[in-house]
Amino acid sequence: MRKLVIPLILLALTACKQEEAQDTSALPLDEDSAGHYCQMNLLEHDGPKAQAHLKGLPGAPLFFSQVRDVVAYMRMPEQSHEILSVWVNDMGAPGVTWEAPGQTNWISAEEAFYVVGGRAVGGMGAPEVVPFSDPDKATRFAAANGGQVARLAAIPDSAVLAPVDLDGNADDTDYNERLRSLSRKYGE
Image (cartoon, rainbow, N blue to C red):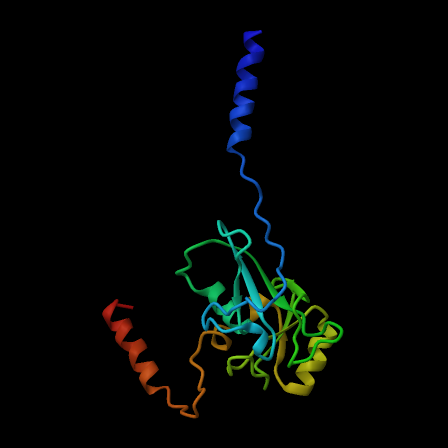
């Protein structure tokens, strides 16, 4: 009997330690969906949106006003939580337009085909990386709007991390000088 009791106790303790898997399903956009960086209502902005689900924050994804912002977020090393899943609007879904990119037409960021380097400008006025579930629709969008089709891992950092000229001043001197200063400060 004693041989049976100890394994049962261990099994019970192990069951208590198991964590429930966090639901990382895409959530629909609504009037309360605000961009992580800008804190503005996403439904008021054109172009595709994104959401990232973080470990330990169930039911409260970070929403992004532009897909380029979530790609930048994924590549920044200073995240406070592990990213479990990222969803982006499928801009090739039926009925989707640039002005109305959809509230529920989410696809996995890993599985999307992106148009990078084209003329498309997202909801916050920066160049956008435009996601599609269908590579043929991505290719047609690129033919009409410029850019190339790429998978998530192939999107160059310069497409999502470089400064954006929103006010017509294309002079990167200040930005470049600040980078040089940081490099000298930290010996890189």
